[in-house]
Image (cartoon, rainbow, N blue to C red; front, side, top):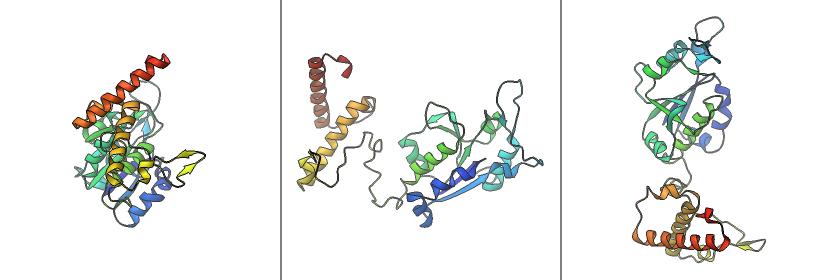
Length: 256
């Protein structure tokens, strides 16, 4: 899969892309990440990429000419792949969107700076807008890395374990179950016996129960979207009853 990132600061992305899983994926030809410096496509002698907003106001606005020139030179006109603007105004990124984009052979990511973009970029060049959360950053480079990382790990062969991404939090609609490794006892804290039993059926059941419990405690809103089996509904009902009893015994009704 190919990622084209358009940015004013390509040097800020390189260290992360050249490390660990993404570096190995690129070396094996599973992903390509091409960094394009928008400033290279500015035609004036100062390589200007921003200007004051019409109508006044604080901050500077990214000019349309270098952004259009960069995209059209690198990926053609009209673009034959999704062109994603990284902006707080976009749809909030999640695992489902990562899976959606992982099915694309190529995507372009536009990382902004300053106060924002000339609106003509949004209206006439961009095909999608994505936010990584309800907060504002100084630029779109970190969001670009987040999208690349989340999407790349869903591609076949990128992770060492072919099913490694399937059990991740949010991948199945639930938060992930607890993990343990050696030693089996540390400072008096033991690994749950079921994980040492060798009984794979019991282990899978325990992991599913733990995922349900974690989601119930930390993100109960996620359960509203889940299609649960009958045993899972009964398990959660029992867990909720236990939580209510515990909350009443401690006098803290906020726990439920």
